[in-house]
Every structure is written in structure tokens, then in C-alpha cells.
Image (cartoon, rainbow over all chains, first blue to last red; front, side, top):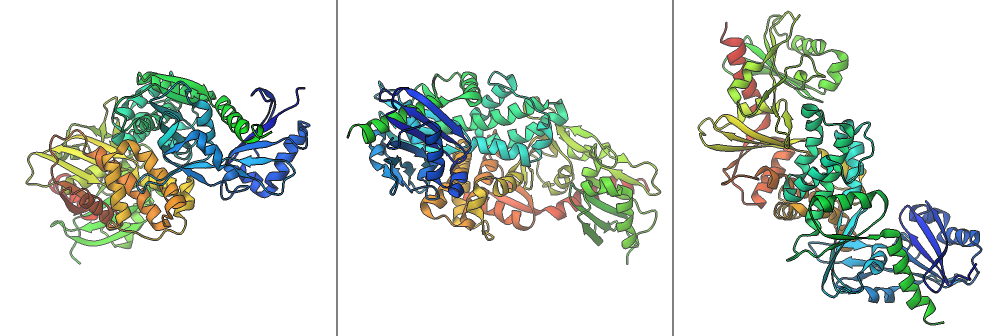
Length: 307
Length: 307
């Protein structure tokens, strides 16, 4: 195997992903596990990282670049936040070395928006963003990064001007499990972004977001009065939350540029379906690829340039 | 004691309330318990009703008028729904007698809105509404009935033209208990409708309802970046949900009449505070009094007029 140049790690709250990279930004090998911050805070960050590097027979002096929750206060070493407006390449300058380790390990900082009325934070997505930007873009860019806590980012060129977190994924989860709607969703099967009930719910919530918490109730009343199926009930719940999020994410834009969607797997299909339902131009960037590309850019600057 | 003319019962999902009434709509005695539909479906509706009437030494032939979930499919006897648009006094004609009982017991129906895009149901609130209407009103009326599932009703005179249910109370509950915001609310004390963070959240969500699920996240980010206290975190969560609901409830009105708020206790104070924060004219009707007045109107027509 080609000798790796560095390891790139995306260390989230509940997931750990590591890639061995060569100096040409090519992936040589990878590891994935559920040993996120929550697990690592108990088992030890150093121990977990070493076990994965050892499993790949990585050289003892291989440098490591890390993004995500490992840099949170309750993580490995606090890497703080860079305040917006922030130039993304400048974020790399806030990287913090982990002391007392035999190898060179750097943890990237997050982004913070300190406005009194719209406080917000991200950690990990700033690196994904760095890898997802359109390098040709000079004007306004809008990036949508769906997830448990979806992030919408407005940029001017490479400068993040503002961002907002929407609790879409988590709300879907707690509402479908813990509210009266759980009965209506009982037995739901998978649905995709082309489900017509999903598309209708996206359009309705995008147009009338002030009715969102009423549209949620129609999941139940639709079952009572119109026999809405469990799968369509889940699609309506999801579409309502995603439609509201998109309306929020596009607020305060004079013109709407093509949205850069950073997503993989099922969420990718749902958001692409939602954008189609709303006739919104979009371009999808694979989320895994984006974070690797962002970590590679960081490694290039922080770990390799000095060598 | 004056001989009662009838018993009035508001039988909800999780609560049972009974009033002994004289023929002049005066309350002679009352009982309250947690034996709502959920309990009664197991213990028996007849048994529970009798135990409360016996405890008040009610005559064996005392007639009873009931509203609420006792008339649901999973209740005592299904009392069906009257479809909107519906004249409220005409709702009384849909009352269903309970067969096989020694006394005359009538259960009032609910209201259903069968529109494909806005299905909705209420059960119990239609009776409260009957007791909350402004008898002098001839034009458009808007009634707000806050709760686990808040109801907003638009009327033309005494005719319900449309209504909508907002999951405000339940969302507050599941989000504060089961989401990441639980940490931020841990240790929250009571707050009232004059809490400035509550008022700000109401105004922000009313103005930008499309940001609602982002404003929810600022409960957490506000704690991380600005040290938002647990009590203010709860106030922001509540204000965001209530502000969104009010924006929804007032949608599609050319002019906004004074809102008739049907509420008691803590919710009354919160909604009055929210309306003040939005400079919206309102008049409050006590929720208990409204349901009693509605049940009395039903009893007068169904039980007493025929005697």
C-alpha cells in the first residue's frame, strides 16, 4: 500500500469515521464506528483513535486532522469557535494541537454566530462546508446540510455571512416516538422524496410555515377522517418539517441561487425530492466526500505544507 | 340543597369534571378527577359516572349531559361529528342517548372539518365554544382555545366556518422532555406571560414562523453562547411555539377582530401575555365557565325543554 500522508477523522457526537489519505487526497483505507464523543468521553479519545490507527497498521508518526465534536468543551481538547462572518480557509488557523501525544494531532474549531437574536453554533459542518463550496463561485452561495440538526449556511464567496440550525431530524424523531402522532405512524414503511404526500406537505409548509404545528396535527386528523396510511403519515410529518426548514433557510435572500445540498443516503433523496417539489434549483455534493475534501484541505495546510 | 335539574359532565381524555346544576344554570356542587376516557375505558364509564353522582347524593333519575371524549369511538358511545360549516346550536341536535341506563344521559357530538388539505376534529371544545361566544356578535369571530392541542376557530355569527388544531402544548412537552433542549431546560422555574424572553420569542415566531424550528435551536445555542438560564430557555421554547400558533390562527383573516381567548390558570396568563406582546386586542372567557355554560345550553334544550 502507498504510504499514507495523514489520517482524516470526522468525530461526531455518536459516530467516528477515519480515512487514511495519501498526499494526493486519495483514500487508502477507512474505519467507521459508533464511538462518537459520547462513548469516547468515557473510553478515552486517545485510546479509541489509536485502536483504529493500529487496526490499519498506520505508521506511529502519522499526523491526524480531526473535525467535529472531539473539539467541543466536553470533547477531547476544546478547539473553540471562530466567529462569523468568517472566511472558511481562515477557520483552519484556529486548529488546536492535542498535547502529550506522540503523533501530531490537530482538532479544527467550530463556527459561532453570536448575534443576540440568532445565536448559533456548528462543529464539523464547517469542515464539510470547506469541502462542499463551489470553487468557481464568487457571489452568494446557499448551502443546505440536512441532519438531526440541519444547517443552512449563507456565504459570500468563501465567507460565511450567517447560518442557522433547524431541529428537523430531531423533531421528526421525538414527535414520531413520543407524541400522539406515534399511533398514526405505527407500522410505517419507508418512503422516498417522490412520495406525493411528502411533496404536498413540503409545498404546504413552505407556503404557510405559520401552519406548521397545525399541519403536524393533520397527520392524526388525516388518519381519523381520511384513512391516511402510516407510511403517508410519516411522509406528511417529514414533509412538513422539511418544508418549514427550507422556507426558513431561504429567508432574507433577494434572489435564490442554486442550493448546494450536502447530503448522503436517505436524506439526500428526501431533500432532492423536496427541492423538486418546490422547483428549486440545486446541486448535490456527497456529504462524506465533502468532509474528506475539507479535512484534506486542512491537512494540506496544517500538516503537509510545513514538511 | 336546591334539587338539581341535571348533571353536566366534561369528560376529557385524562380528566373528568361534573357539576350538579339547577334550572337557573347555577352550580350546586361539583366533582373533579383524573378518571378521563383512558381510565374509564377500562373501569367502565357507567360505573365512574354513578360513583360521582352517588357521592353527591344525586337523585336516581337526574338526567346527565356529557361532552368530550366520552363520545369518541374509543369512548362510551360514539357520538360522531357534525361537519363544518356548522351552526353551533345545531350541534346539539347530534346528541346521542346512552342506551341501557336508568337515567337519561346524552353525549354531545364533536365537530369535523373534512377538507382534504386541512382535516381536523374537535371533541368537547365545541361545547366550550357554545358557552364562549359573544351573543351580541354578528360578524366574524375568532376564538383561541389553548391547550395540549390548541384550537383556533373562525366563526361567522354562530356558524363555525373553519377551525385548526395546533399541537403547541404537546410539542412543548415532548421537546422539553425528549430533545437535546431538555439539558437547557433542566432546573427551569415557572415563568409567566410577562417574561421578556417569552415576549421576544412570541414576537419573533409570529413575524418569522418559517424560522420556528431554528428558534427552537437557539434555546440551546443561547445557553451555549449567551448563558441563557433554564427558566428563560423554557420561556423561549414556549414563546416560539405560541407565537407560531398565533400566526397560524390569524391566517387568512382580512381584518383581525378582538380574539376571544377561552382559557384558565397558567395558560390564560401566557396567552394574554402573548397577545399583549403582539398588541392584539383580546377578551378572556374562563374555560371552565365556558364549558359549563355550553353544557347548560345543551341541557336546557335537550333535557329540560321536553319536561
